[in-house]
Image (cartoon, rainbow, N blue to C red; front, side, top):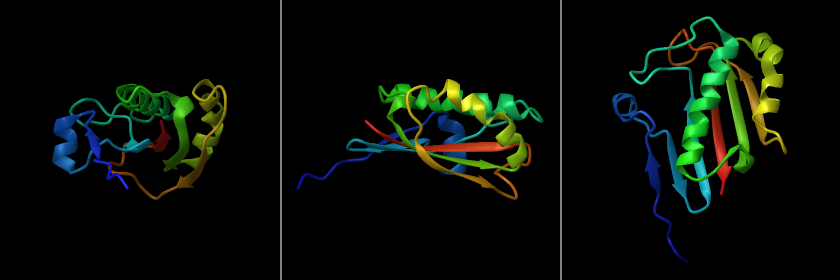
Length: 130
C-alpha cells in the first residue's frame, strides 16, 4: 500500500503561522479545508456586523483554496457552518444556492457561543474529494 504525503497550503501564510494552522491539507484525493472567516490579509475582521457580507467573504476565500487544488464547489462533499447567529444564517442560507448549483454537500450547521474573534459571525469549513 502506497503512503500518501500530505500537501499543505496556506492562504495567508503570516496569519496562519501566527495562529499555528494550515488553511488546507491534501492527502491523496481528499482535501480538508480549515474554517474560513471574514478577514483581511493581516487577519483583521472585515464586514464587521454584516452577516451576509461575512458569508460571501468566507466563500470567496474557500474558492481561492479550491482553485489552488484545481477544484470547485462541485468537489465539496462536506460543509460545516459555525455561526454565532443562527437566525441570521438561516435568513441568508439561500445564498448557498449561488455556490452549490448542481448538488449540495453533506454538513452540519452549528450555533456557537463564539468564534476566534468576537467580530466573526460565521466560519465555514470544507472537506473536498478531487
